[in-house]
Image 1 (cartoon, rainbow, N blue to C red):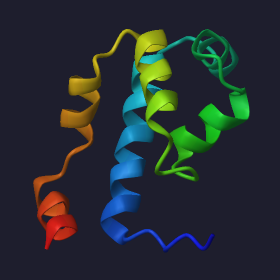
Image 2: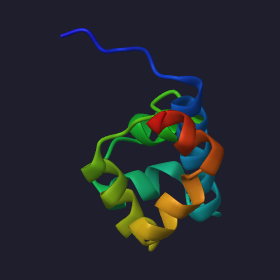
Image 3: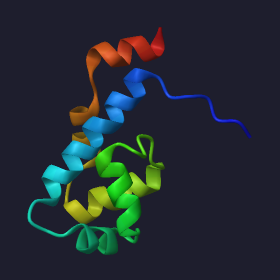
Image 4: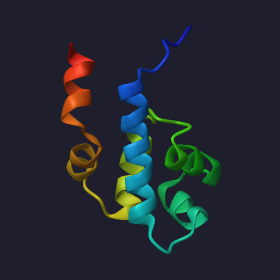
Length: 89
């Protein structure tokens, strides 16, 4: 299966998600948060740095639970209204 390349808007959205997760992690180590979410530290590292800009829903949900962030808060913080319009155009 060939995956279509991500658009610049999708990449920016992934970067916003990574920045938000890094901020929410605060002083906790990447290993601690990843373990609490049932992920590898490398997976969390890729998401936080934007190298995995479109993580699976259940990965994001597990991180949200581990960081005590609602999915609505994550979605709102990651949304860029200009990008959202470009994605639906």
